[in-house]
Every structure is written in structure tokens, then in C-alpha cells.
Image 1 (cartoon, rainbow, N blue to C red):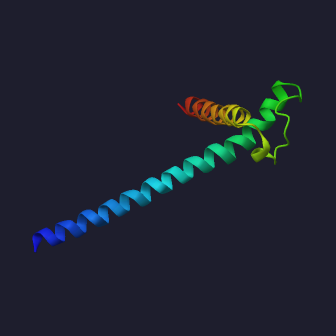
Image 2: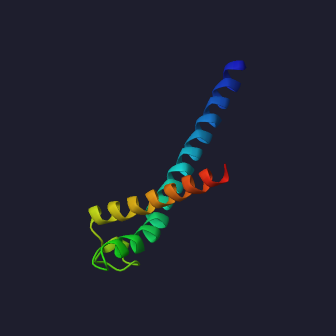
Length: 91
């Protein structure tokens, strides 16, 4: 009887782990691809004086993979830097 309960509990915990990992992956995907893109795009345009990226802000899917990565990294770096700056100013 204990083996059955243990097997059921392990199955439930594995399912719970898969659900949590999927949720974390989805949140990271949304944050990195959407939020970071919309923050990084105007920053990249300002730094390059309006030349890069050459796609519109709403045309992320048409941008090259390299452009998507660079713009999203700029956006994510900006968010992290802003969080660090705010955190340091509160100390």
C-alpha cells in the first residue's frame, strides 16, 4: 500500500515540477522576447541615430535572428541596469 501511495505522490510531484518549469520558461520567453524587444528597440534606434534596427517596432518576427537577439539583450540589460540603479539608490 505504501508503494502505491509513494508512486502516486512521485507522479504528482513530477507533474507539478513540469508545470512549474513550463511556467518559468513561458515567463522568461515573454519577458525576453516581448518586453526586452519593446524596451531595446527605441534605445537601439537612439544610439544608431535612427538607422538600426531597420524593422519597425511591431515587426519583430521579420527581423533577423541576430537583430532580435541584440535588441532584446539591449532591452534586458537596460532593465537589469535600471533595477541595480534603483536598488543602489534605496540603500
